[in-house]
Length: 106
Image (cartoon, rainbow, N blue to C red):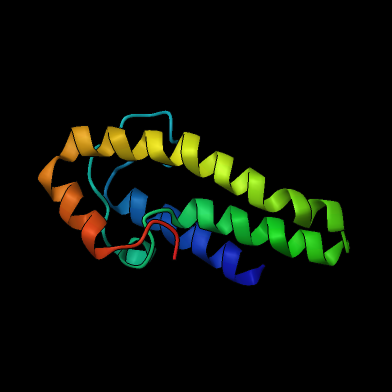
């Protein structure tokens, strides 16, 4: 879970360096490709996933682990894919090249 905190902080720093909001509902001003965005297109969401799994293990919660797969698939199919369509429209070919280089999650 320490990795998740570090990942989230570094992702927020990278966004701030590029004057891009961390809130996903605000318009993106620049395509950030440095910091943790070099390795994953969704470092903040990845930190949420790591935290969720970590807490499920800390609390020894089998129901949380069982729900993990449908939750992540649903989140990926709704929020993440919607954001990717937005970024493709906003940044075009630059974002498509970025998608070819960097995996969605890890």
